[in-house]
Image (cartoon, rainbow, N blue to C red; front, side, top):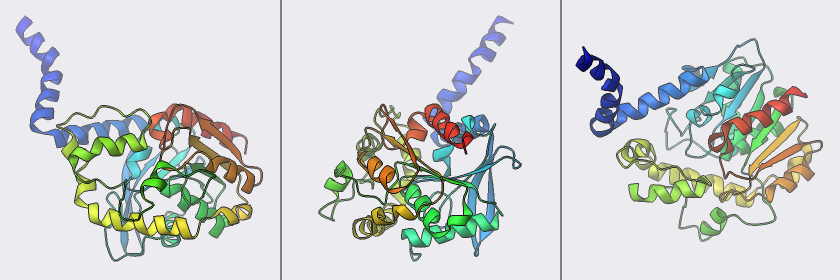
Length: 311
């Protein structure tokens, strides 16, 4: 009996060890499932203009909808860390944009911000979302900002998390490194390059076990060339056509969130956005980098909910 109890006690640990060494892919998939379970989200899909859009949905559809738009090389699960703090009060929708995640990876599509914004609007229309609150991080924040400019009557509010598409007073590390146009700091060269990339994005990088790296970074390596091409499309658009001069046209109530230690998009963008968007509010997190919804999801959700509650 004691032996049997010991087996029951250590069976989960044995299973985890086995998965780590023999089936690391299943371990990562299990972690993703648990994260979604904790946040109360499920994966769904909708066909938009002949293209299947996978997305995560959580919360009560009768409550206000919060549309969450991921950044470059990200996907819908970038928001799974934030979901547990939002789904009690909001109906959340987090799609994979074309070119990323499980959406279509067609290299012949246009991936400029204008095209992606129009596709996002078609996705919103396909789901019949009525004036959602629109939040976006990085590239997704740029798309959210363009959404507010191009479809001003189609959103209830705008939340920008370290958004691209704006030039601040100071250049970021990313802008400096990519200035010569022949080096892309956001594309993986190989597995050994992963730690450098994570350190660029996250202020306090977590330790990622070596056995899990081939699984976690498989997508980035598989689509490396396509991601590189998309990066330069949006980088050149940001350099040649920033939205600084159009910020005054944003009419939606706006919250600006930023990480003080962002190396991709400098925190000096915040006063530019604040000055340009009338009535906007801002909050700078002193302990995070480029992805506050991943680095400190609870604090990020608290500020977002405080903003939304006052609308």
